[in-house]
Length: 392
Image 1 (tube, rainbow, N blue to C red):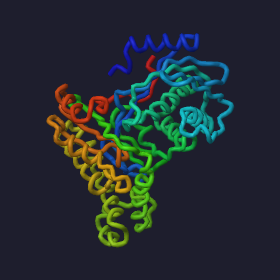
Image 2 (cartoon, rainbow, N blue to C red; image 1 turned 45 degrees about the horizontal axis):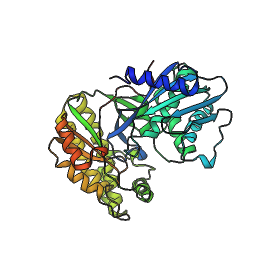
Image 3 (tube, rainbow, N blue to C red; image 1 turned 90 degrees about the vertical axis):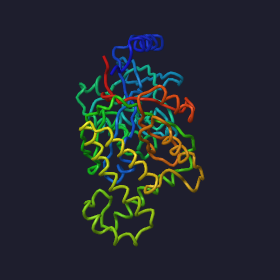
Image 4 (cartoon, helix red, strand yellow; image 1 turned 60 degrees about the vertical axis):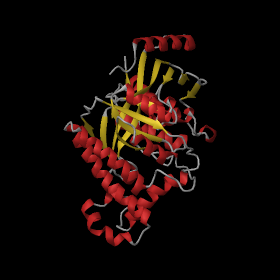
C-alpha cells in the first residue's frame, strides 16, 4: 500500500520550504487505528484485536541544531517546544504542545535521545471519528525522534508507551495502550495486556481485501459520559476483587466458569454481565485471529457481530441513561439492515460516537450507507500493514 503519493509528498515538501525556508530531508507517515474485537478489555488486562488504517498523518521533516521542535500543521498555528524546557504546564493540558513535550520527556527519562526538528504536517485522520487522530500525531513525533536521533532502532511498543505517557501525564487523558500500539505496529494484531508493562503481540495475516471497512459517526456528545466510561473498569475490577484479584485477567477462565454463580449474588447484575463480557470477549479475540489466519471470512464476520451484541447487551455501552441519547442504538439497528453490510458493532468506548462495519466492496454499498448516515459521517478505509514510519 502506498503510504503517500508522489504529488502529496511534493506539495508537502514545497509547503515545508515555504514555511521554514529550508528543504525537508525526510518524509514520515503515521496511521490511525481501529479496534476490531476486544471492546473494553484492555483496562482489565485482556486481549484486543486492533489494526492500523489507511488514514494517516504525513510529515515533511528536517533536523534543527537549536534544540527546538517546530511543527506546522495545516489549519493550525505553529507549535514550538524547547527541548530543555519540558516541565508540565497545566495550561497546556489538552493541547498538541503537551503531546510533544510528553513524548520527549519519556524518551529522555528512558535514556534515549531527542533533538530539534522542523515538521510540516497534513492529516486526513478524521477528528471525532474514534480512529485516534491524537495518537497518530504522537507516534509521528516519536518516530521522528527515533529515526533522527536513535538510529531507528527503538521497538514499536517503546514508541507506543512514550505516546501513552504523553497522553496520561501531559495531555490529561487516562488512556490505555491499545491505540498507540496499533498505530506503532501496523497491520492487524492481537495484543494481550495481561502484563501491562510488556504486552504480548501476535500478528494476524489479514487477507480480507475483498471487503470494505467503515467507521460511521453517529453523533452524540461525549462530554457528559466520563462517569459511564469510568464505571466499566470500576465494576469489572469490583468483580475481580471477589476472586482476590486486581483485574479480571488474573482469574483463569476455568475458575470463572466454575465459581461465577457464587459471585453473581455479591455484585450488581450489570457488573456481573460486564465481567462475563470480558471473558467471552477475550475468547472472541482469539477466534477472530484464527479466522483471519485461516482465511475464514464468514467465521470472522460472525465473531464481529457477536462482539457487537455482547457490547450492547452485556457490556451495556451503547446507551447512557443519564444522557438519554439513543442515537448509537438506533444507528446500530439501522446499519445492520443495510444491504451489503456483513457485520457491525459499536466502535471504541461507546455510549455515543461511532460504529465499525464490514461490507461488500461496492460503491453501491457505500452509497446506501451514506444515504442513511450522510456522506460526511461515513469513512471508508482499509488496513495499512505499516505502522508509523519514515517513508523516505
